[in-house]
Image 1 (cartoon, rainbow, N blue to C red):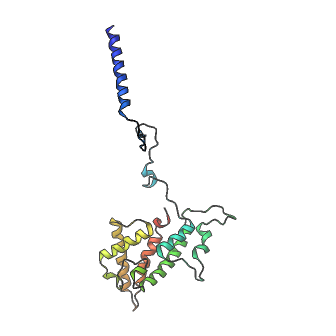
Image 2 (cartoon, rainbow, N blue to C red):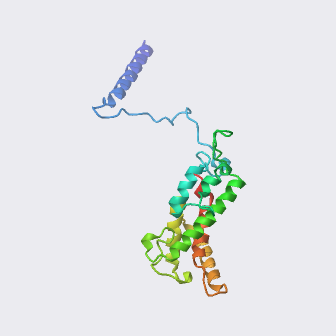
Image 3 (cartoon, one colour):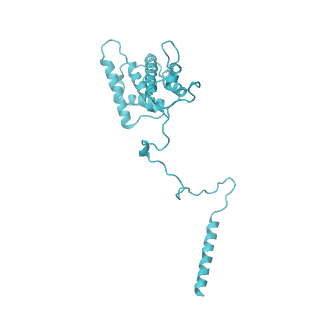
Length: 231
């Protein structure tokens, strides 16, 4: 008899606790969201893939720019279109080789990185970077430049730039080309590349120093980097 009474008391106590717990959460007011339970407390979710199995990436694999996106990206980053020797648009002339669909024989655009795409991209990078660098070295107003906007209004020997000025120039251009600034050891390596190129230009024989080629070198390297053509 005592055992039955004790069991009934325990059941009544448990029922009272459940009711008190239910009353602990007040009803939502107008404009108030109902509390959502944490979905990750149980084993009902799929864990993220192992970054080591995906080259350090957790999300989707990088995608290459389409031909139209590449054309717009070059114009935005460099400030100049790729033109052929006869004045035609270099992207349009090579669009089928770059992967654009013609919708006659090919109905979908190829965005896979390949050697043909890399070769033509390098050709285009050389043209736009060299031409833009020549134009900027003659432009005294930094606000009217694209690649060298952070450099002083007038400059000649690029070896005279301070380390801070070189780093500012590289951070500005990496952000412009890739959307993310150079930093840390990688930035230091790029500073070394810039300094080496500036020194090389000044030691070449001849009275005319092609200092614009230092800017072109950095431009070509950044434009052909995978970070420029993928997203």
